[in-house]
Length: 110
Image (cartoon, rainbow, N blue to C red; front, side):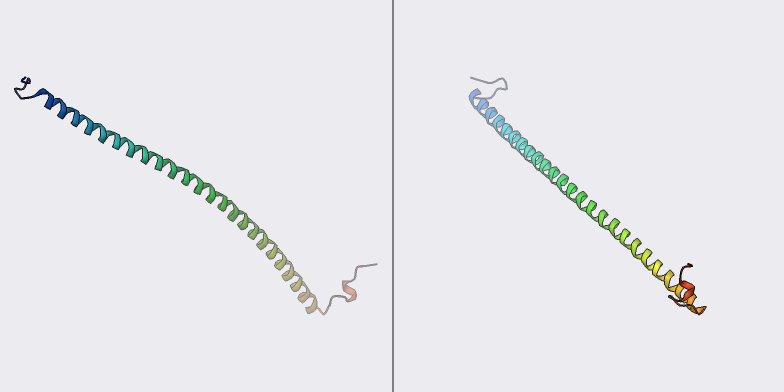
């Protein structure tokens, strides 16, 4: 039997079309599998990024707390140093006037 294009066996053409269709179908399935795999990998990567971000935010909070504590300690140290310097200077001033701690001028009035 002749085909519309004047060729030979129609069974041969149908077989070739089926073979081409199956090859195309296999290629499409492979591409869909690859896309699904990539989507899974992207989701996993996204989850890892979220986990790492949360971990870093936690570490950042700890570092901020440590910095705040260091600032408080520095302020206390500065205050103590300032107080000690003021006391030393006051004692030097009094000493320059000939007064010493414990002398009658330092005692409160009765």
